[in-house]
Amino acid sequence: MNLKKSLLLITAISMAFFLAACGDDDGAEFQWDFVTEEVQGQVQYEYAAEFAERMAEKSDGRVEITVFEYGGLGDGVDQAEQLMDGYTELAIVSPGFTGTMVEEAQLFALHFLFPDDIALTQQILDESEALNVELRAKYEEHNMTPLAFWTEGAMQWTGSSPLRTPDDFDGFQMRIQESPLISNSYQAYGADPTPLDWGELYTSLQQGALDGQENPIFFIEDAGFHEVQDHMTVSNHNNYVAMTVVNTDFYNDLPDDIREMVDETVEEMRSVGFEMQDQMNEELLTAIEEDTENPTEVYYLSEDERQAFRELAIPVRQFFIDNYGEDSGRILNMLEEEIQAAQQ
Ligand code: 6CS
Image (cartoon, rainbow, N blue to C red; front, side):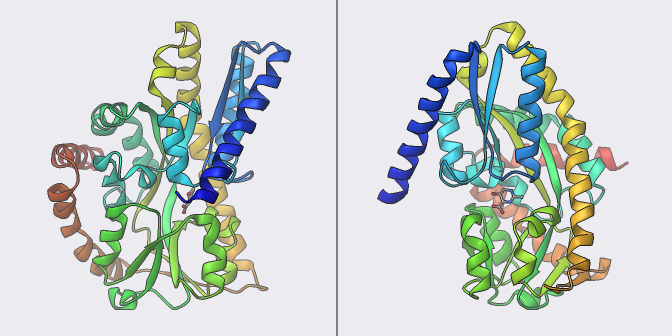
């Protein structure tokens, strides 16, 4: 992190503490910060806001949660680090941003791993022992406890040029989240991946510094990326997985009744979060298709076209096992077996 960013971060954290201290007057016994990587109207923020409301109600006002939009507390990596260090209590974290801390969590960067059926994917995320026991333990080594893994939708590509075959990625300047395995996944297609904070992405695409990016449809529309990209490819090459994460010490130190309320709310939010992303992804696909002011050609890859990408993506799994974390092979194999069983 550079000096300017560090100063901004310190100011933002001090402000948060100051506001929390001011809040003591209203009597809430527990005052927590819930940080998200998105802004109002987007899935993560709306999930956290709903979570906060439910906790306030359930606890009769004993728990007050302040929800933070993306932006005030640094980038995705900074936010994960603040949670790990206990500056914040709860966060929605994209595993991509923890790739250098929990190497095994990079498995979410593997393309064509989860089923195309998004409801089945959510069921796997809910029930997987590989994720909810094994990977959770890896995060807990870093003082972060993922309480839920949940989908924000299938990921699609946007580009300044059409993206239909691996050849179209040759030399393509692809924006990625800061995660080594996401980079490997795009290098396998011949692209030139560049990590960048999403806050700077619109301008980079607009100015042509980057050629394209990947995200779920709701995010592409809401962040306006389609306005500065002529093409969108419905590739369903991966699933955008987010995690509801708590600081481990904070969570373990909670009184039993309050911890049970947190767990109960996490359970309730599984279907609420799923519905939120489902509705937003559907509505905003229509919005992109009907936006005549900023026309974007929407292309649906055929199964044969997807197969050409899948063939290049499969060897990345071995690369992941060989290079990222001592338990990556064991956890990935376990997850692949769970996926297979769920599909039968
Ligand atoms: O592309 C990104 O970096 C952002 N995309 C989503 C769907 N949520 C937050 C994340 O930082």
